[in-house]
Length: 444
Figure 1 (cartoon, helix red, strand yellow):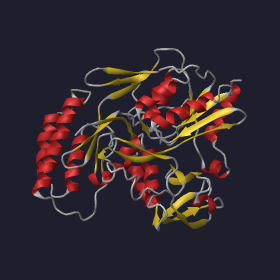
Figure 2: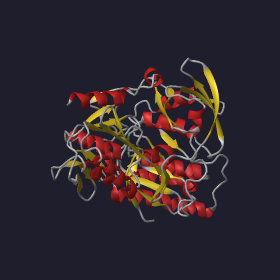
Figure 3: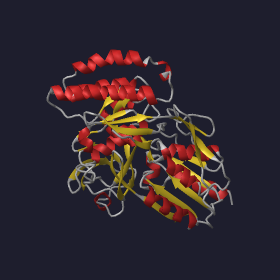
Figure 4: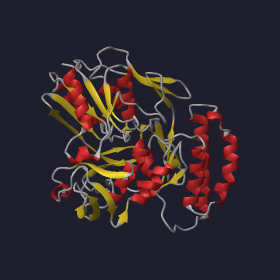
């Protein structure tokens, strides 16, 4: 049951986990309807898994007082409930309730069937296809924000700003209302809502999904869109499902560098490409790093990327507090560094390492942040295999940004708050990017 250390990806908890949102009720994902009762052996393995989770948290949780929770009482209360569980769903719910007592994100049970093909290296498996578009939920309206070029969705004329009304005949409004109420007090609400819509759009590549939109003229139109493989290269890390990782860079608005990537993963490929993008912009008027929709990944990559913009040694993005000792996220300068204006774009779907990077660079005074408050889901975690075959994701430390503020449940507040609107998207504008460009031009 060897652990795999990551700086948790918020997406993993939002999409796959069984746990407790700090501000909401228990969520259980990944179970199968009508599953059969447990055998005696499965019950035994579930009890072992329960004990492993409880003792791991007892020994590794960074706060020995557990935030005032009596951890022994939790064990004694929920242990008998687990013994009475007759399905895997019920067993996972009990284990999720135990972790939920801590009131922290990034504690999750990830069902075994999600990882069935990971060790065999067989790729993302069924359901990895996408509709070739990205979505944000604004005021309970699911809006298309970007469309992949040359995708079937683009060929059918789907446009940024179109609202998604229904997917495969199921109206989205009831789902969005329910989830919005469920997460009304959570800083990660935008992340959960967007991922719920994207999950509805996902499916087997090559198959079609029927999507009803409200177009730019406020007319309902229905499109059958062929799903495609996600863009980018497939990356593996520990027990996390294989994920496609991409990075894009270009020049915008008269010699301003622009870099965007979807995950802090695949460092052997991503870090050199990121460095090349920065070095190619040595004479640029400014650089923009777009972390909107990036749910995080490996924390060490944030320190490495910061080094291309900070030349002074011994600078820190923040400090991680573990049970044993604090760990400082010290930046390693990569000379020659870029010294010009740096803007970072974020939104409510920016989580984990995206928040570490953006929050630290803001606290150090090296970057100006544009967009909306981030997800506030920033705890580092590990993933272990349980005796019953499931995976157990658990936070190992608390994280405090260099400015002295926690990121968990708070997020990174932008220096300049700019919100996307449907009108701007329909007009082909990106007001967040426009605001960053305007600021860089004002620095000339």
